[in-house]
Length: 447
Image (tube, rainbow, N blue to C red):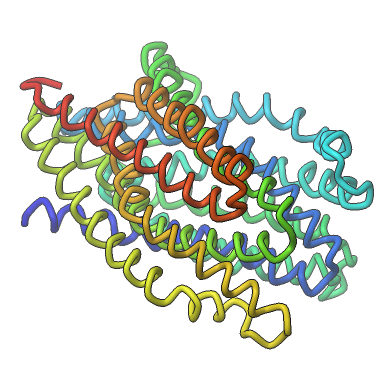
């Protein structure tokens, strides 16, 4: 029960922070949908490559949390070590960002080569080129959020994210439509608002790090040019496999969305509705998993493998219970849930709702596995185990999941349902593999 209370104190703000992160993207969709269909389509396409770059650079940012947690467990008063982790995390994401930005600037020609309509490809290229300028600040803000979370202050990230949502909405509304005397910029205005909100979020997080009573004692920005070679190597050794692991999962779902588009507009619309529902429920185990990284890391740093296992088991149990309830709701009320998105006002809505309800039954089947795999991966990060989880995830998603999706959807001609059954198979494989590894590693008496 003590571990449950400690986990809940960390996890609750993190869950709401992840949901708030989704709200920023939803804000862009709502604003651009009222501007033009071309702008909305271009932002949807552009966001895929922007977030691909973000995932590549996010690995070192996520490595900061387990590094600090281990130090707190092993040497609770080592402020210099904690400060060194923050320092190398910021420099690492800056270095990766500077490599990614020039590549993202060529997004337009890439979209043309992929066969997108010239008008949409050019607009998407402009969106990515401007939004990419905020990438270092977005990743830097994530480093600062993980720094605060590892030190027991997850609410700071939630407060900053709430402010960022408001900033992004006001900036987007002003720049997209040209309010308050501003020039009407359309999709470029949306990208400018996205980049500006990243800068805003970073500045707010930095102010909390400097001014918060519990965080300022670490003097996080002191001697920023003094780098620890060992910690710099560690942030990349942990971070890059973490980033690749997230890419494996994201690339599979994006690829299958493209495949789903070949089955018709109704199937694609139903797919997007089901994915939206699954993404919302996923935020809860993701937040729980991020909290488990800190709890497991602190126990492992102190050499308490029993405590590390206890922290992991509590996180896995909470996630499993929540996702089981979500699965039951999706299975029983798939059609009403889908109708909330469309309203069944148009003649073709009935087909989309029926298809989405079918997909949600498959989503119900993988809710438990989805929750276990994300928490399993996060608990392993708490043990500083990143390379093997990367291989396990890669195998589950691309050696098992992708072939299953293609075979069921195309080979057996099951269409979109085959893709969703493939999701069940790959997420089950990932959950079993990652949880088994966590239990095997925590059998040891020392980390």
